[in-house]
Length: 553
Picture 1 (cartoon, rainbow, N blue to C red):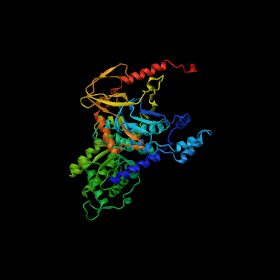
Picture 2: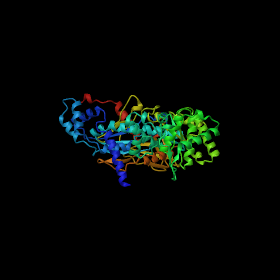
Picture 3: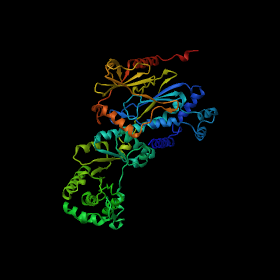
Picture 4: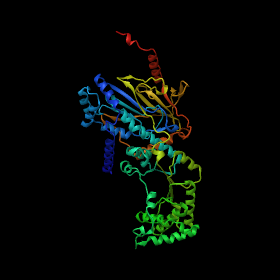
Protein backbone atom coordinates (compact mmCIF):
# COMPACT_ATOMS: atom_id res chain seq x y z
CA UNK A 1 0.00 0.00 0.00
CA UNK A 2 2.81 2.43 0.92
CA UNK A 3 4.57 1.66 -2.37
CA UNK A 4 1.35 2.32 -4.28
CA UNK A 5 0.88 5.68 -2.54
CA UNK A 6 4.49 6.65 -3.29
CA UNK A 7 3.98 5.77 -6.95
CA UNK A 8 0.83 7.91 -7.08
CA UNK A 9 2.66 10.85 -5.47
CA UNK A 10 5.51 10.50 -7.96
CA UNK A 11 3.05 10.38 -10.88
CA UNK A 12 1.28 13.47 -9.57
CA UNK A 13 4.57 15.33 -9.12
CA UNK A 14 5.64 14.49 -12.68
CA UNK A 15 2.30 15.76 -13.93
CA UNK A 16 2.79 19.10 -12.17
CA UNK A 17 6.39 19.46 -13.39
CA UNK A 18 5.38 18.74 -16.98
CA UNK A 19 2.58 21.31 -16.89
CA UNK A 20 4.18 24.08 -14.82
CA UNK A 21 7.78 25.11 -15.45
CA UNK A 22 9.43 28.30 -14.10
CA UNK A 23 8.87 29.82 -17.55
CA UNK A 24 5.10 29.62 -17.07
CA UNK A 25 4.97 33.25 -16.00
CA UNK A 26 4.75 36.77 -17.42
CA UNK A 27 7.83 38.29 -19.02
CA UNK A 28 7.72 41.33 -16.77
CA UNK A 29 8.55 39.10 -13.80
CA UNK A 30 11.98 38.60 -15.39
CA UNK A 31 12.43 42.26 -16.23
CA UNK A 32 11.68 43.19 -12.61
CA UNK A 33 13.96 40.42 -11.32
CA UNK A 34 16.75 41.78 -13.49
CA UNK A 35 16.20 45.31 -12.22
CA UNK A 36 16.30 44.05 -8.62
CA UNK A 37 19.50 42.14 -9.40
CA UNK A 38 21.17 45.12 -11.07
CA UNK A 39 20.33 47.28 -8.04
CA UNK A 40 21.69 44.66 -5.64
CA UNK A 41 18.24 44.20 -4.08
CA UNK A 42 17.46 40.68 -5.29
CA UNK A 43 18.24 39.06 -1.92
CA UNK A 44 16.32 41.53 0.24
CA UNK A 45 13.78 39.68 2.40
CA UNK A 46 10.25 40.26 1.11
CA UNK A 47 6.73 39.04 1.82
CA UNK A 48 3.86 38.69 -0.66
CA UNK A 49 0.35 37.44 0.01
CA UNK A 50 -2.39 35.99 -2.13
CA UNK A 51 -6.09 36.84 -1.77
CA UNK A 52 -9.19 37.77 -3.77
CA UNK A 53 -11.31 40.88 -3.46
CA UNK A 54 -14.87 39.56 -4.02
CA UNK A 55 -16.58 36.24 -3.33
CA UNK A 56 -17.40 34.56 -6.67
CA UNK A 57 -20.81 33.76 -8.21
CA UNK A 58 -22.49 36.44 -6.08
CA UNK A 59 -22.10 34.06 -3.15
CA UNK A 60 -20.85 34.38 0.38
CA UNK A 61 -17.75 32.17 0.37
CA UNK A 62 -15.04 30.46 -1.64
CA UNK A 63 -13.03 27.27 -1.19
CA UNK A 64 -9.24 27.44 -1.31
CA UNK A 65 -7.73 24.90 -3.70
CA UNK A 66 -4.50 24.34 -5.60
CA UNK A 67 -2.13 24.19 -2.63
CA UNK A 68 -0.66 20.76 -3.43
CA UNK A 69 0.21 21.84 -6.96
CA UNK A 70 1.81 25.03 -5.64
CA UNK A 71 4.01 23.10 -3.22
CA UNK A 72 5.11 20.55 -5.82
CA UNK A 73 5.91 23.38 -8.23
CA UNK A 74 8.04 25.14 -5.60
CA UNK A 75 9.89 21.97 -4.68
CA UNK A 76 10.89 21.45 -8.31
CA UNK A 77 11.52 25.10 -9.23
CA UNK A 78 14.72 25.24 -11.30
CA UNK A 79 15.58 26.80 -14.63
CA UNK A 80 16.90 24.39 -17.24
CA UNK A 81 19.71 25.49 -19.55
CA UNK A 82 17.29 25.79 -22.46
CA UNK A 83 15.00 28.00 -20.31
CA UNK A 84 17.85 30.39 -19.61
CA UNK A 85 18.95 30.43 -23.26
CA UNK A 86 15.41 31.31 -24.28
CA UNK A 87 15.36 34.20 -21.81
CA UNK A 88 18.69 35.35 -23.16
CA UNK A 89 17.09 35.53 -26.61
CA UNK A 90 14.06 37.62 -25.56
CA UNK A 91 15.52 39.99 -22.97
CA UNK A 92 17.39 43.08 -24.26
CA UNK A 93 20.75 42.30 -25.81
CA UNK A 94 22.58 44.49 -23.29
CA UNK A 95 21.33 42.42 -20.33
CA UNK A 96 24.30 41.59 -18.12
CA UNK A 97 25.34 37.96 -18.85
CA UNK A 98 25.89 37.35 -15.13
CA UNK A 99 22.14 37.65 -14.60
CA UNK A 100 21.62 34.46 -16.59
CA UNK A 101 24.21 32.72 -14.44
CA UNK A 102 22.23 33.90 -11.43
CA UNK A 103 19.01 32.42 -12.89
CA UNK A 104 20.69 29.04 -13.46
CA UNK A 105 21.42 28.77 -9.74
CA UNK A 106 17.94 29.77 -8.53
CA UNK A 107 15.69 27.46 -6.54
CA UNK A 108 13.17 27.86 -3.71
CA UNK A 109 15.44 26.77 -0.87
CA UNK A 110 15.13 30.24 0.71
CA UNK A 111 11.35 30.51 0.18
CA UNK A 112 8.79 29.91 2.94
CA UNK A 113 5.05 29.43 2.50
CA UNK A 114 2.28 29.79 5.06
CA UNK A 115 -1.20 28.78 3.92
CA UNK A 116 -4.64 27.64 4.96
CA UNK A 117 -5.41 23.97 4.40
CA UNK A 118 -6.69 22.93 0.98
CA UNK A 119 -10.48 22.82 1.04
CA UNK A 120 -10.85 25.55 3.68
CA UNK A 121 -13.73 28.00 3.34
CA UNK A 122 -12.18 31.42 2.71
CA UNK A 123 -13.57 34.90 2.26
CA UNK A 124 -12.80 38.05 0.29
CA UNK A 125 -9.79 40.12 1.44
CA UNK A 126 -8.43 37.35 3.70
CA UNK A 127 -4.84 36.41 2.69
CA UNK A 128 -4.91 32.62 2.49
CA UNK A 129 -1.35 32.15 1.25
CA UNK A 130 1.81 34.04 2.28
CA UNK A 131 5.10 33.79 0.36
CA UNK A 132 8.34 35.02 1.91
CA UNK A 133 11.92 34.91 0.72
CA UNK A 134 14.46 36.82 -1.39
CA UNK A 135 12.73 39.62 -3.29
CA UNK A 136 13.64 38.57 -6.83
CA UNK A 137 12.56 34.96 -6.55
CA UNK A 138 9.30 35.58 -4.67
CA UNK A 139 8.52 38.14 -7.39
CA UNK A 140 9.21 35.50 -10.07
CA UNK A 141 6.69 33.14 -8.40
CA UNK A 142 3.72 35.51 -8.70
CA UNK A 143 2.09 34.51 -11.97
CA UNK A 144 2.70 30.78 -11.59
CA UNK A 145 1.13 30.65 -8.11
CA UNK A 146 -1.84 32.74 -9.26
CA UNK A 147 -2.32 30.42 -12.22
CA UNK A 148 -2.30 27.36 -9.96
CA UNK A 149 -4.72 28.81 -7.40
CA UNK A 150 -7.18 30.99 -9.35
CA UNK A 151 -9.01 28.40 -11.45
CA UNK A 152 -8.61 25.58 -8.93
CA UNK A 153 -10.33 27.62 -6.21
CA UNK A 154 -12.96 28.96 -8.59
CA UNK A 155 -14.07 25.59 -9.99
CA UNK A 156 -13.89 24.01 -6.53
CA UNK A 157 -16.23 26.73 -5.26
CA UNK A 158 -18.52 26.25 -8.25
CA UNK A 159 -18.72 22.54 -7.45
CA UNK A 160 -19.58 23.32 -3.82
CA UNK A 161 -22.45 25.50 -5.01
CA UNK A 162 -23.70 22.72 -7.29
CA UNK A 163 -23.57 20.38 -4.31
CA UNK A 164 -25.57 22.83 -2.18
CA UNK A 165 -28.12 23.18 -5.01
CA UNK A 166 -28.40 19.41 -5.46
CA UNK A 167 -28.69 18.60 -1.78
CA UNK A 168 -26.70 15.98 0.14
CA UNK A 169 -28.27 12.79 -1.26
CA UNK A 170 -28.25 13.19 -5.05
CA UNK A 171 -25.02 11.92 -6.60
CA UNK A 172 -23.11 14.27 -8.87
CA UNK A 173 -20.94 13.24 -11.82
CA UNK A 174 -18.44 15.69 -13.36
CA UNK A 175 -18.33 15.12 -17.11
CA UNK A 176 -16.89 18.38 -18.44
CA UNK A 177 -13.61 17.26 -20.03
CA UNK A 178 -14.84 17.79 -23.59
CA UNK A 179 -16.07 21.28 -22.67
CA UNK A 180 -13.04 22.36 -20.62
CA UNK A 181 -10.49 24.98 -21.62
CA UNK A 182 -7.85 22.53 -22.82
CA UNK A 183 -6.39 19.36 -21.30
CA UNK A 184 -5.00 21.09 -18.21
CA UNK A 185 -8.33 22.82 -17.59
CA UNK A 186 -10.07 19.47 -17.85
CA UNK A 187 -7.72 17.74 -15.40
CA UNK A 188 -7.87 20.62 -12.95
CA UNK A 189 -11.65 20.70 -13.13
CA UNK A 190 -11.97 16.98 -12.47
CA UNK A 191 -9.74 17.13 -9.41
CA UNK A 192 -11.17 20.22 -7.78
CA UNK A 193 -14.84 19.60 -8.53
CA UNK A 194 -14.36 16.32 -6.66
CA UNK A 195 -12.89 18.22 -3.72
CA UNK A 196 -15.78 20.68 -3.96
CA UNK A 197 -18.36 17.93 -3.50
CA UNK A 198 -18.86 15.93 -6.70
CA UNK A 199 -18.86 12.15 -6.31
CA UNK A 200 -17.52 10.91 -9.64
CA UNK A 201 -15.72 11.98 -12.81
CA UNK A 202 -15.84 10.74 -16.38
CA UNK A 203 -12.15 11.68 -16.79
CA UNK A 204 -10.06 8.49 -16.83
CA UNK A 205 -6.72 10.27 -16.44
CA UNK A 206 -8.01 12.22 -13.44
CA UNK A 207 -9.06 8.93 -11.91
CA UNK A 208 -5.56 7.55 -12.34
CA UNK A 209 -3.70 10.66 -11.16
CA UNK A 210 -5.92 11.70 -8.27
CA UNK A 211 -7.74 8.55 -7.17
CA UNK A 212 -11.17 9.94 -8.07
CA UNK A 213 -13.93 7.36 -8.68
CA UNK A 214 -14.72 7.21 -12.40
CA UNK A 215 -17.97 6.40 -14.16
CA UNK A 216 -19.33 6.17 -17.70
CA UNK A 217 -21.42 3.92 -19.92
CA UNK A 218 -22.37 4.77 -23.49
CA UNK A 219 -23.05 7.71 -25.83
CA UNK A 220 -25.85 8.10 -28.36
CA UNK A 221 -23.34 7.26 -31.08
CA UNK A 222 -23.05 3.73 -29.72
CA UNK A 223 -26.82 3.29 -29.92
CA UNK A 224 -27.18 4.78 -33.39
CA UNK A 225 -24.28 2.70 -34.74
CA UNK A 226 -26.58 -0.38 -34.62
CA UNK A 227 -29.43 -0.99 -37.04
CA UNK A 228 -30.19 -4.70 -36.82
CA UNK A 229 -30.16 -7.59 -34.36
CA UNK A 230 -27.88 -9.34 -36.83
CA UNK A 231 -25.10 -7.03 -35.62
CA UNK A 232 -25.22 -8.47 -32.09
CA UNK A 233 -22.28 -10.78 -31.49
CA UNK A 234 -21.85 -12.89 -29.51
CA UNK A 235 -25.53 -13.63 -29.06
CA UNK A 236 -25.26 -15.73 -25.93
CA UNK A 237 -24.55 -15.02 -22.27
CA UNK A 238 -23.54 -17.42 -19.52
CA UNK A 239 -25.71 -17.06 -16.37
CA UNK A 240 -24.03 -15.24 -13.51
CA UNK A 241 -23.85 -18.41 -11.40
CA UNK A 242 -22.55 -20.52 -14.27
CA UNK A 243 -24.14 -23.03 -16.60
CA UNK A 244 -24.73 -23.29 -20.31
CA UNK A 245 -24.70 -20.12 -22.45
CA UNK A 246 -28.19 -18.75 -23.05
CA UNK A 247 -29.49 -17.24 -26.30
CA UNK A 248 -29.91 -13.69 -25.03
CA UNK A 249 -31.64 -12.39 -28.17
CA UNK A 250 -34.45 -14.95 -27.91
CA UNK A 251 -34.75 -14.31 -24.19
CA UNK A 252 -35.01 -10.55 -24.68
CA UNK A 253 -37.52 -10.86 -27.52
CA UNK A 254 -39.79 -12.86 -25.22
CA UNK A 255 -39.49 -10.29 -22.45
CA UNK A 256 -40.06 -7.40 -24.87
CA UNK A 257 -43.43 -8.87 -25.92
CA UNK A 258 -44.50 -9.22 -22.29
CA UNK A 259 -43.37 -5.66 -21.43
CA UNK A 260 -45.26 -4.19 -24.39
CA UNK A 261 -48.37 -6.14 -23.41
CA UNK A 262 -48.08 -4.90 -19.79
CA UNK A 263 -47.68 -1.27 -20.79
CA UNK A 264 -50.12 -1.35 -23.70
CA UNK A 265 -47.54 -0.26 -26.27
CA UNK A 266 -46.92 -1.35 -29.85
CA UNK A 267 -43.86 -3.56 -30.41
CA UNK A 268 -43.65 -2.25 -33.98
CA UNK A 269 -42.51 1.17 -32.71
CA UNK A 270 -39.45 -0.27 -30.95
CA UNK A 271 -36.24 0.56 -32.81
CA UNK A 272 -34.43 -2.66 -33.72
CA UNK A 273 -31.06 -0.89 -33.75
CA UNK A 274 -31.61 0.43 -30.23
CA UNK A 275 -32.51 -3.03 -28.97
CA UNK A 276 -29.42 -4.43 -30.70
CA UNK A 277 -27.21 -1.79 -29.07
CA UNK A 278 -28.58 -2.57 -25.62
CA UNK A 279 -28.17 -6.31 -26.16
CA UNK A 280 -24.60 -5.97 -27.35
CA UNK A 281 -23.69 -3.74 -24.42
CA UNK A 282 -25.42 -6.01 -21.91
CA UNK A 283 -23.43 -8.99 -23.19
CA UNK A 284 -20.21 -6.97 -22.78
CA UNK A 285 -21.16 -5.53 -19.38
CA UNK A 286 -23.86 -7.65 -17.76
CA UNK A 287 -22.90 -6.38 -14.28
CA UNK A 288 -22.84 -2.69 -15.28
CA UNK A 289 -25.76 -2.24 -17.63
CA UNK A 290 -26.82 1.43 -17.69
CA UNK A 291 -27.71 2.66 -21.20
CA UNK A 292 -28.83 6.05 -22.45
CA UNK A 293 -32.48 5.58 -23.47
CA UNK A 294 -33.41 8.78 -25.33
CA UNK A 295 -31.62 8.28 -28.66
CA UNK A 296 -35.00 7.95 -30.39
CA UNK A 297 -38.04 7.91 -28.10
CA UNK A 298 -37.95 7.16 -24.38
CA UNK A 299 -41.53 5.94 -24.07
CA UNK A 300 -41.89 4.19 -27.43
CA UNK A 301 -38.52 2.49 -27.68
CA UNK A 302 -35.68 3.22 -25.26
CA UNK A 303 -37.48 2.40 -22.02
CA UNK A 304 -39.08 -0.73 -23.47
CA UNK A 305 -35.75 -2.01 -24.78
CA UNK A 306 -34.11 -1.40 -21.41
CA UNK A 307 -36.84 -3.20 -19.47
CA UNK A 308 -36.69 -6.23 -21.78
CA UNK A 309 -32.89 -6.50 -21.57
CA UNK A 310 -32.88 -5.84 -17.83
CA UNK A 311 -35.51 -8.54 -17.21
CA UNK A 312 -33.43 -11.00 -19.21
CA UNK A 313 -30.31 -10.10 -17.22
CA UNK A 314 -32.19 -10.53 -13.95
CA UNK A 315 -33.40 -13.93 -15.13
CA UNK A 316 -29.73 -14.85 -15.57
CA UNK A 317 -28.98 -13.56 -12.03
CA UNK A 318 -27.27 -10.34 -13.12
CA UNK A 319 -28.00 -6.93 -11.56
CA UNK A 320 -28.53 -4.10 -14.07
CA UNK A 321 -27.84 -0.58 -12.78
CA UNK A 322 -30.38 1.76 -14.39
CA UNK A 323 -30.78 4.29 -17.21
CA UNK A 324 -29.56 7.69 -18.35
CA UNK A 325 -31.78 10.50 -19.68
CA UNK A 326 -30.06 13.17 -21.74
CA UNK A 327 -32.77 15.29 -23.35
CA UNK A 328 -36.25 16.66 -22.92
CA UNK A 329 -38.08 17.24 -19.67
CA UNK A 330 -35.94 15.22 -17.29
CA UNK A 331 -38.32 15.55 -14.34
CA UNK A 332 -41.39 14.35 -16.21
CA UNK A 333 -39.50 11.55 -17.94
CA UNK A 334 -37.89 10.35 -14.72
CA UNK A 335 -41.28 10.08 -13.03
CA UNK A 336 -42.62 8.05 -15.95
CA UNK A 337 -39.54 5.80 -16.01
CA UNK A 338 -39.84 5.13 -12.28
CA UNK A 339 -43.53 4.30 -12.68
CA UNK A 340 -42.67 1.73 -15.35
CA UNK A 341 -39.91 0.26 -13.19
CA UNK A 342 -42.32 -0.22 -10.31
CA UNK A 343 -44.97 -1.68 -12.58
CA UNK A 344 -42.47 -4.21 -13.97
CA UNK A 345 -41.24 -5.03 -10.48
CA UNK A 346 -44.74 -5.79 -9.23
CA UNK A 347 -46.07 -7.56 -12.31
CA UNK A 348 -43.02 -9.72 -13.02
CA UNK A 349 -41.99 -10.13 -9.36
CA UNK A 350 -38.50 -8.76 -9.99
CA UNK A 351 -37.52 -6.63 -6.94
CA UNK A 352 -34.30 -5.45 -8.61
CA UNK A 353 -36.36 -2.97 -10.65
CA UNK A 354 -37.11 -1.06 -7.44
CA UNK A 355 -33.45 -0.16 -6.99
CA UNK A 356 -32.56 0.96 -10.51
CA UNK A 357 -31.02 4.43 -10.65
CA UNK A 358 -32.00 7.20 -13.05
CA UNK A 359 -29.23 9.54 -14.22
CA UNK A 360 -29.99 12.94 -15.75
CA UNK A 361 -27.44 14.71 -17.99
CA UNK A 362 -28.98 17.52 -20.03
CA UNK A 363 -26.76 20.68 -19.95
CA UNK A 364 -27.42 21.08 -16.24
CA UNK A 365 -26.65 24.40 -14.51
CA UNK A 366 -26.74 25.45 -10.87
CA UNK A 367 -30.13 27.05 -11.40
CA UNK A 368 -31.28 23.92 -13.21
CA UNK A 369 -30.49 21.88 -10.10
CA UNK A 370 -32.41 24.36 -7.97
CA UNK A 371 -35.42 24.04 -10.28
CA UNK A 372 -35.06 20.26 -10.27
CA UNK A 373 -35.56 20.21 -6.52
CA UNK A 374 -38.75 22.26 -6.84
CA UNK A 375 -40.44 19.72 -9.11
CA UNK A 376 -41.45 16.10 -8.67
CA UNK A 377 -38.69 13.93 -10.09
CA UNK A 378 -37.06 10.55 -9.64
CA UNK A 379 -33.49 11.47 -10.65
CA UNK A 380 -30.88 9.79 -8.46
CA UNK A 381 -27.74 11.22 -10.06
CA UNK A 382 -26.91 14.20 -12.25
CA UNK A 383 -24.07 14.60 -14.71
CA UNK A 384 -22.78 18.15 -15.16
CA UNK A 385 -20.33 19.44 -17.74
CA UNK A 386 -20.24 22.85 -19.41
CA UNK A 387 -21.65 25.08 -16.67
CA UNK A 388 -19.47 23.41 -14.05
CA UNK A 389 -16.03 23.40 -15.64
CA UNK A 390 -16.30 26.69 -17.55
CA UNK A 391 -17.80 28.56 -14.57
CA UNK A 392 -20.06 30.38 -17.01
CA UNK A 393 -21.57 32.78 -14.48
CA UNK A 394 -18.20 33.90 -13.04
CA UNK A 395 -15.22 33.06 -15.27
CA UNK A 396 -12.42 34.27 -12.96
CA UNK A 397 -11.86 34.42 -9.21
CA UNK A 398 -9.55 37.42 -9.57
CA UNK A 399 -6.90 36.38 -7.05
CA UNK A 400 -4.08 38.90 -6.62
CA UNK A 401 -0.53 38.63 -5.28
CA UNK A 402 0.58 41.73 -3.42
CA UNK A 403 3.78 42.88 -1.73
CA UNK A 404 3.21 43.62 1.98
CA UNK A 405 6.73 43.80 3.43
CA UNK A 406 10.33 44.47 2.32
CA UNK A 407 13.37 44.38 4.66
CA UNK A 408 10.97 44.08 7.61
CA UNK A 409 9.15 47.31 6.65
CA UNK A 410 5.42 47.15 5.81
CA UNK A 411 4.34 48.04 2.28
CA UNK A 412 0.87 49.12 1.22
CA UNK A 413 -0.67 49.79 -2.18
CA UNK A 414 -2.64 53.04 -2.07
CA UNK A 415 -5.20 53.45 -4.82
CA UNK A 416 -7.81 55.94 -5.95
CA UNK A 417 -10.11 52.91 -5.87
CA UNK A 418 -10.36 51.98 -2.15
CA UNK A 419 -11.21 48.39 -3.09
CA UNK A 420 -7.75 48.02 -4.64
CA UNK A 421 -5.83 49.22 -1.61
CA UNK A 422 -3.94 46.52 0.27
CA UNK A 423 -3.28 45.85 3.94
CA UNK A 424 0.37 46.31 4.94
CA UNK A 425 2.71 44.11 6.91
CA UNK A 426 3.12 40.47 7.70
CA UNK A 427 -0.04 39.02 9.18
CA UNK A 428 -1.62 36.39 11.36
CA UNK A 429 -5.13 35.28 10.42
CA UNK A 430 -7.61 34.02 13.00
CA UNK A 431 -11.09 32.58 12.66
CA UNK A 432 -13.31 33.44 15.62
CA UNK A 433 -16.05 30.91 16.35
CA UNK A 434 -19.22 31.23 18.39
CA UNK A 435 -20.36 28.90 21.17
CA UNK A 436 -21.81 26.43 18.64
CA UNK A 437 -18.57 26.21 16.67
CA UNK A 438 -19.79 28.25 13.70
CA UNK A 439 -17.41 30.78 12.10
CA UNK A 440 -18.30 34.24 13.38
CA UNK A 441 -15.54 36.44 11.98
CA UNK A 442 -12.12 36.30 10.33
CA UNK A 443 -9.67 38.65 12.05
CA UNK A 444 -6.55 39.97 10.29
CA UNK A 445 -3.80 40.97 12.73
CA UNK A 446 -0.17 41.96 12.46
CA UNK A 447 2.08 38.93 12.93
CA UNK A 448 3.66 40.30 16.10
CA UNK A 449 0.31 40.74 17.86
CA UNK A 450 -0.74 38.20 20.50
CA UNK A 451 -3.51 35.85 19.40
CA UNK A 452 -7.08 36.65 20.47
CA UNK A 453 -8.08 34.92 23.68
CA UNK A 454 -11.20 32.89 24.24
CA UNK A 455 -13.75 34.75 26.33
CA UNK A 456 -11.83 38.04 26.18
CA UNK A 457 -13.48 40.97 24.40
CA UNK A 458 -11.50 42.69 21.64
CA UNK A 459 -12.06 45.66 19.37
CA UNK A 460 -11.76 45.37 15.60
CA UNK A 461 -12.68 47.17 12.39
CA UNK A 462 -14.85 45.26 9.88
CA UNK A 463 -13.71 45.69 6.25
CA UNK A 464 -16.13 47.14 3.77
CA UNK A 465 -18.35 48.62 6.46
CA UNK A 466 -18.51 52.16 7.76
CA UNK A 467 -19.53 51.15 11.27
CA UNK A 468 -16.21 52.00 12.85
CA UNK A 469 -14.96 49.94 15.76
CA UNK A 470 -16.78 46.73 16.74
CA UNK A 471 -16.43 44.65 19.89
CA UNK A 472 -16.44 40.84 19.77
CA UNK A 473 -15.87 38.10 22.34
CA UNK A 474 -14.81 34.81 20.71
CA UNK A 475 -15.94 31.50 22.18
CA UNK A 476 -13.25 29.67 20.17
CA UNK A 477 -10.20 30.85 18.21
CA UNK A 478 -8.36 29.03 15.43
CA UNK A 479 -5.28 30.14 13.53
CA UNK A 480 -6.10 29.74 9.85
CA UNK A 481 -2.63 29.44 8.34
CA UNK A 482 0.25 27.08 9.03
CA UNK A 483 3.77 26.70 7.65
CA UNK A 484 3.71 24.33 4.68
CA UNK A 485 7.00 24.96 2.85
CA UNK A 486 10.47 25.84 4.15
CA UNK A 487 14.12 25.39 3.04
CA UNK A 488 13.01 23.91 -0.26
CA UNK A 489 10.89 21.18 1.33
CA UNK A 490 7.19 20.57 1.89
CA UNK A 491 6.76 20.52 5.67
CA UNK A 492 3.34 18.87 5.93
CA UNK A 493 2.01 15.70 4.26
CA UNK A 494 0.27 16.47 0.97
CA UNK A 495 -3.47 15.90 1.14
CA UNK A 496 -5.04 13.46 -1.30
CA UNK A 497 -8.05 14.59 -3.28
CA UNK A 498 -10.21 12.42 -1.03
CA UNK A 499 -8.79 13.96 2.16
CA UNK A 500 -9.23 17.49 0.81
CA UNK A 501 -12.80 16.65 -0.20
CA UNK A 502 -13.66 15.54 3.33
CA UNK A 503 -12.01 18.64 4.76
CA UNK A 504 -13.91 20.92 2.36
CA UNK A 505 -17.27 19.40 3.22
CA UNK A 506 -16.53 19.66 6.95
CA UNK A 507 -15.48 23.29 6.52
CA UNK A 508 -18.68 24.07 4.61
CA UNK A 509 -20.90 22.32 7.11
CA UNK A 510 -19.58 24.59 9.87
CA UNK A 511 -20.89 27.71 8.08
CA UNK A 512 -24.26 29.11 9.02
CA UNK A 513 -26.90 28.51 6.30
CA UNK A 514 -27.33 32.26 5.71
CA UNK A 515 -23.68 32.47 4.62
CA UNK A 516 -24.16 29.55 2.20
CA UNK A 517 -27.29 30.82 0.45
CA UNK A 518 -26.85 30.61 -3.31
CA UNK A 519 -28.63 33.92 -3.82
CA UNK A 520 -28.22 37.06 -1.68
CA UNK A 521 -26.30 35.48 1.21
CA UNK A 522 -25.55 37.48 4.33
CA UNK A 523 -22.06 38.95 4.33
CA UNK A 524 -19.52 37.19 6.50
CA UNK A 525 -17.51 39.60 8.64
CA UNK A 526 -13.82 40.07 7.90
CA UNK A 527 -12.16 42.57 10.23
CA UNK A 528 -8.74 44.01 11.04
CA UNK A 529 -7.26 44.47 14.49
CA UNK A 530 -6.80 47.84 16.16
CA UNK A 531 -3.06 47.72 15.53
CA UNK A 532 -3.57 46.94 11.86
CA UNK A 533 -6.07 49.77 11.59
CA UNK A 534 -3.58 52.15 13.23
CA UNK A 535 -0.82 51.07 10.81
CA UNK A 536 -3.07 51.66 7.81
CA UNK A 537 -4.01 55.10 9.14
CA UNK A 538 -0.37 56.03 9.78
CA UNK A 539 0.67 54.99 6.26
CA UNK A 540 -2.19 56.93 4.69
CA UNK A 541 -1.34 60.02 6.73
CA UNK A 542 2.32 59.74 5.82
CA UNK A 543 1.45 59.43 2.15
CA UNK A 544 -0.88 62.45 2.27
CA UNK A 545 1.88 64.62 3.68
CA UNK A 546 3.98 63.99 0.59
CA UNK A 547 7.78 63.98 0.51
CA UNK A 548 10.45 66.63 0.16
CA UNK A 549 13.07 64.29 -1.32
CA UNK A 550 13.44 66.56 -4.37
CA UNK A 551 14.55 69.39 -2.06
CA UNK A 552 17.17 67.34 -0.24
CA UNK A 553 20.80 67.83 -1.26
